[in-house]
Image 1 (cartoon, rainbow, N blue to C red):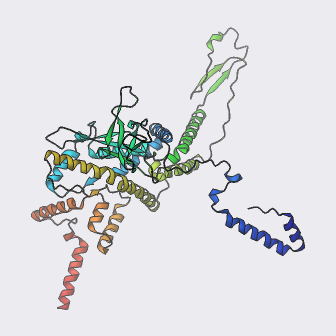
Image 2 (tube, rainbow, N blue to C red):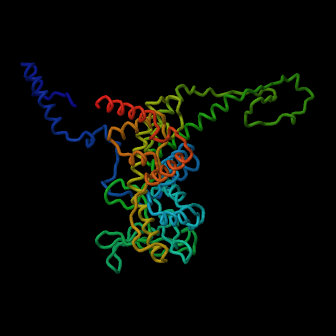
Image 3 (cartoon, rainbow, N blue to C red):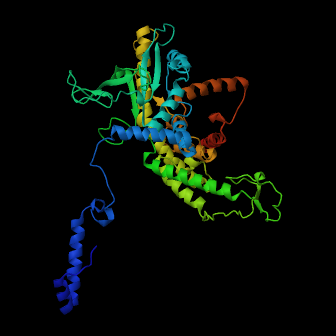
Length: 485
């Protein structure tokens, strides 16, 4: 805000300071009203703030660079490695499982999904593929899953092939094809903007004999987190933190080297000319590094001078502040990314975990379940119907149960869930799903347990009929009825 006075202000202020002050105040008020958005200012403060014009999606060249740098950080930086694995492990856990009521359908699903034969590369079962897809999605920004139809006549004739988006043929980039569609970034769109399919290399695109073929959209699952409308490719998680993480990595390496040098306690001996009479000068070797416990004899006239690097005071506090910002760029808490729990109590740990849990639920409910799990189930049913393994009336949709989060304090949290169910704020089924279990399966197991306990004459506390609170309530109800009678 400028307080410079023009000539008229100075004249008015000289003869009437009161009116001069009012003129300045009103002009500054008008300046504030006309300013608009503070972030849109173009002055000295924003001179170095260079931005591109508004774009609905990142450029392909930028995405490729981001993906390569993200993969490099994953391979060489422990915090990036932990972040991507934490995202994958907490999002998929033991697997996002379907809630299947029909026993025959449940058996067919397990025979297919729980075997590594579901994987084209025969490395993972379906739940392992979920973990692989989420880790790749986090690291690369997107991942492709291809439907491979097989000739297997004994089991579901379906395999899943997970490939990196580097298999997309980016050279297929035309404004208009002979059919009226257009191709952008290896993805072909109809004239209406709907996706028709993908141009995917059959082998590693770096190989000379690899070529791309067209895959229909119904045979491909393209997973990515959409940040804005019109986006067709995803960006790696943690992209806002890449530069900070790289700089912090260099800073940490420099501090490590500094400490290594400081720990090298060595002794240097310089002999006089008199002591050197008759000595063989070849006994003295040049040295270019300092090692712990080194005793080095120097030639006459030679000495050693050490640099005095500045102290690294506040390194721990600085590291925590930097890593807090970096972890925010990955969508997770500082404790989840670093494993540092030294300053966490129950309340702060729970609050940080709940915030991270909301992000995990977003990835589960907006990406993995509707895009991956639902489409794979549809492929599973179609393949089973084609071979006659599954009946034609097999449902093409099913409920999916995500893994429950680990509890920080099981006693407090279980009692909290129990209180909510008894108060009617939550159903028993919802509470079971929050713990990562399928209500139908739990109910069936409870029936079996009841029969086994009754047959053995056991009254365990796990049986609600013999819970101390229920027994007390039943006793009170009986006494009240007797008194009333």
